[in-house]
Length: 203
Image 1 (cartoon, one colour):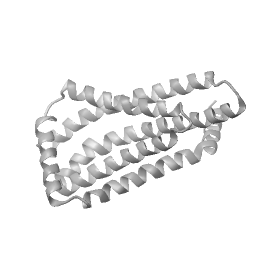
Image 2: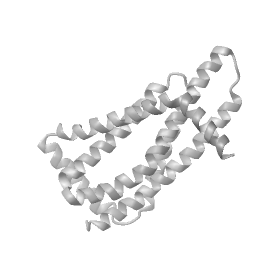
Image 3: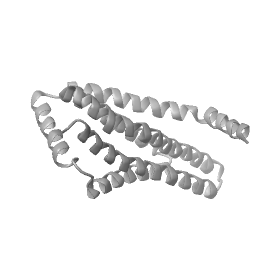
C-alpha cells in the first residue's frame, strides 16, 4: 500500500512538477521584491508606517479579539475561494500567479520592515507571529494554487476533446475545500501567534 501511494506521488510530481516549480518561483520573486521594496520607502512613509504598526501592536493584539479572528478567517476564506474560482476558468492562471506573487511580496515587505524598525524585538516578533504561521500557511496556499492550475489544464483538455469533467470537478472542489479549511485554521492560528509574539516581547 505504501509503495502504491509512493508510486502515485512520484507520478503526480513527474506530471505536475513544472506547476509546483513556477508557483515556488513566483512566490520567491514576490518575497525578494517585498524585501527590496522597503528600501524604496521615504523617511516620511517609514515614520507613518511605523506609527501604524505600533498602534496595531498596542491596541489590537493585546488579547484575542473574536472580531480579529473572524477577520483573519474571512480573509483567508476569500483568498482560497478566489483561487478555487479562478481554477474553474481557462484564463485564470495569470491571476493565480499574481495572487501568489502578492502574498510573497507582503511577507517579504512585512518581515524586512519589522526587522528594520524593531531590531532584535522585531526578529522575535517576526519569528513567532509570521514565520511559524507561514510554515503552515504557505504549503496550503501552494496546494490550493496548484490544484486550481491542474484543473484549468484538465478543463482545457476536456473542452478540446469534448469530454465531461463532472467527476473531476467534484474531486477538485472537495480537495480545494479540504485545503481551504486547513488554510482558514492556519489563519486563525496566526491570530494566536500574533498575541503570543506581542506578549513575548513585552509590547
